[in-house]
Length: 142
Image (cartoon, rainbow, N blue to C red; front, side, top):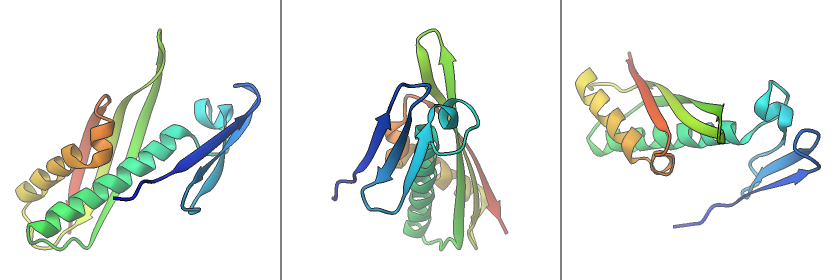
């Protein structure tokens, strides 16, 4: 299996500095800052990138599970909300909410829910993020 790379460079102090994150594939490069991470500033942040990775991984895992079981998904769209909280020990990602809408002809709600739960537990990004509570809302759309 291939290894994937990403990089980040930060310049300056934490509150006044800024940085650039880049995917090794060249598909994305973006600025990030204290403001884009801890406030509502312009740019990306590590939590947003984790959310994108989790949403993408879950969508693929669910599509794979459906296909393996004879269902042909037309689309699986997932949004991930990553909760970053500050406590006495510092900042921690405590929870991730996965919110999925899928168009899958010919499947029952019960089977869809079963495959969605399996995908939540089995996708590699969910496994690496197991220290956070992962919540799933999965809707079967007609």
